[in-house]
Length: 356
Image (cartoon, rainbow, N blue to C red; front, top):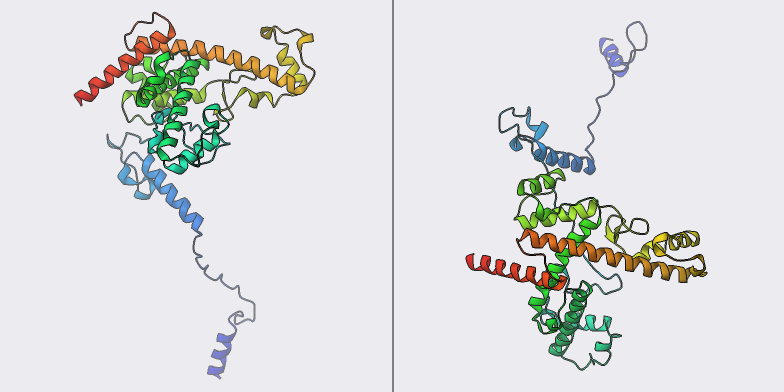
């Protein structure tokens, strides 16, 4: 009987001696494995704690209380570089390379034959390329043709800013590229001035002020002064106000470069009419076209001309700022002032090269 009673007790643990129901204790929870996302989040938190902890070796909360010593009181900050603008033609093949900005001295001789063929195919409608036979031409002939077209493009850009000379077409590509890079540097400073918010350019700031402005925006301060100036110029350009029709300055939608046409296409017929009747265009009501396409074309022409004038004024101001920063005279026509600055920078860079 004792064995039977014991067996019954083991079989039914839910009733006590009085026959009442007993509460079952909750079964211990099984620990489920954490999902991969939780591990990633935990790892990211560890990394952020490491970089933001006063004591990097402490690793934030994971390593216990933070150090209160003198070294531990210095707070770590994460710094970021500024985004770069990469110019490209959305209608061009991905393999197409063009000599712009930092690679203005790109030589077609260094390109493979297929890349040269792509460039020539993209420009086959142009006068210089219309009679060129790509099927029979070898690599050397194609490279020569592409180099001549690139040189012509760059001279046209210099002429647009009024800093080109008749003898520029005889310059080596490297020399022409250095002028292009200087012109683009001045244009960028002009764009900063066109924002209307910053009257002092980075190259006019004291080094302490320059570093302070970068740190305020959490931009890294590693590098030489010229590099720091370019980083702050990029940041100021990004922060600047819009300028033309709807405040457009050529940078919108996250400060991506857009044209006047991109903005004008968004306007309704009534808005187009309103814009054309603004006093500074000096147009009468009878001069406003009836058709939408004609209104768009007219407004695009007016806006482009106005934007060109403003860019020219901003370019002049930025050029004089650079001349003053280098201790040079601001007298004379634009073209002469530009060459004065270009020759000075070439001498300075040549001296640094010999000294290094």
